[in-house]
Image (cartoon, rainbow, N blue to C red):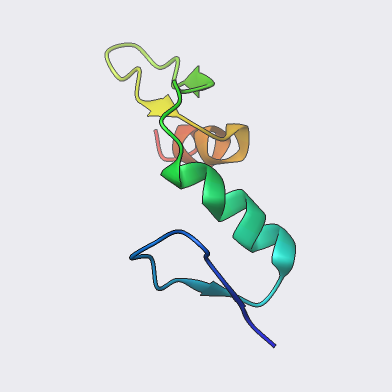
Length: 58
């Protein structure tokens, strides 16, 4: 069973309902919750885990 994104014009589907719920936040207009603290980078992130993954690329 897949869980479709209910947002109009979004065709994404997810195997787990919590992944769909997390994805729904991408449709909201909200400020970033964090940013990369490496000098001269400061890339913004909506999720802390994405920020950590990005940090490891430096």
